[in-house]
Length: 292
Image (cartoon, rainbow, N blue to C red; front, side, top):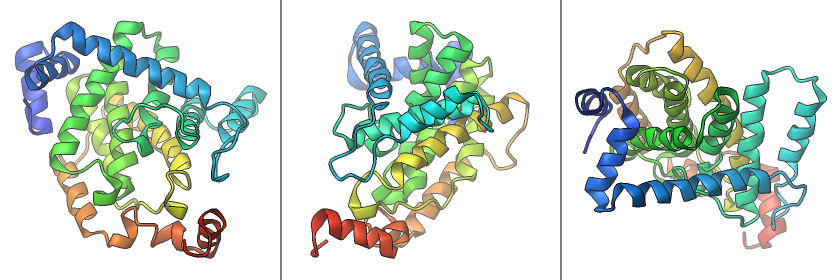
């Protein structure tokens, strides 16, 4: 078991020549008692759910609340127009992330990575990596195990819960995990992956969790899209050789401190931020009535 990013990097190097995915698989075996084949089978199922949630989310249908739905399809059409301003990879990741979270809002099956509310980032980035880097099935599984290793450290030393640490803990963690896995998939080493984690979290510190009407839709869906785009930029920065002045473990600890300091109104209670705007309150009353 590894308990910090520094420990993760050291164990990966000493035990598996820097292979983070292998360290994570071994850790899963030690923690769960499952065999390697059982763990790979479970992760393969997770991969299938992720892929399906992207395709299922590209429909025009709305969620039960009516708050979300159809935006992934809009972005898909815009991508195909050839008139985009942003890089195609970034917009594809954004489209994928919106699709997954719109699917979640419509009661579709998603893989919590690390939560349902932040489930769009990792599948979104993995989809882009698979297409751009030509990842085969085994490499896609390695991507997920690598992401899981960094997510485990974040969960144990900070939080992945919006109710506990704000959206920085949910979408921030998901984007950081995605950035780390993408860095490795693109040929970066374990240290560079840790730097990608730093770049994401440092720039999402303080992001509040303020779901309109208490539903995981507005602004959650779009935040996943932005988180996925952060992951791609962070991976490129790490691969370019840029190094964070603040070590990864200190960055994660800072996220924990910031999350612990957030007022309860900004931690998934729908009492502050966008949820407390006049329009946010009006939407809540429209969905749930005057007692919302």
